[in-house]
Amino acid sequence: MSPKIRLYDEIPGLVKPELLRFLNPLDCLVPAWCSHVWVAWSANDADNASSVADITAYYDYRWARMNVYASWLDQTEEFKRESLTHELLHLYVAPLADYARDMAQLLIADDAPKFHKATKEQIRERCEGVTQDLTLLIMGGQSVRGLVDAREPTAIPNSPDVSRETPTTKQ
Image 1 (cartoon, rainbow, N blue to C red):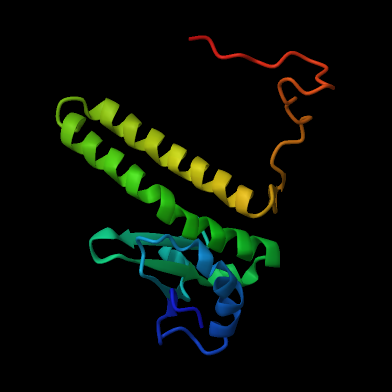
Image 2 (cartoon, rainbow, N blue to C red):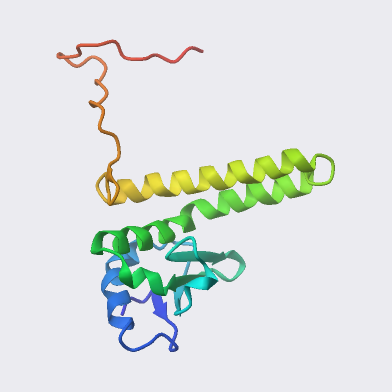
C-alpha cells in the first residue's frame, strides 16, 4: 500500500484490492501539503447519488478524506481511473476555491444574497472545470467521454507552416 493512500479498516475485504489497484499508481498526485488521504467506502449510494466519489481537504491537519461509493464498482476501468484521478486533483484546486467561497461569504453574503448565491455557483463550476481539465491533462487528453477537443491544433506562431492567423492579445 502507498504511504500517502490509507484505507479505513471498515472497507470490505473484496473491495480493498480493487481500490488499491487504482489508487496506488495515483499516489504521486497527492499534493505536498497533504500528508495522506484516508479512503472510506460507502455501500449506500443514497449518501451521494450524483457521483461515484468525493473528497474533503482538512488543510489545518494536512490530510484529506476520499469517500468512494458502491456505484464506483459498476463503472468501466477507464471511468474508475478517471474518477479517482479527478478527486485527487481537487486537492490542488480546493485551497483556492475554498478561499474564494470564504471571502464571498464574508464580503457579500449579507448585503447581496442573490449575488452571493450566483458567485458560489460560479466558483463551484470553475473549480470542477479546472479539476476536470487537469484530469484530462494527466490522462493524456482522453476521457471516457471522448477526445477533449476534436478541432485541429492551434498553429504555433512563427512556425514555417502556419496556414492561418494566430490570435493576438490586445493590451
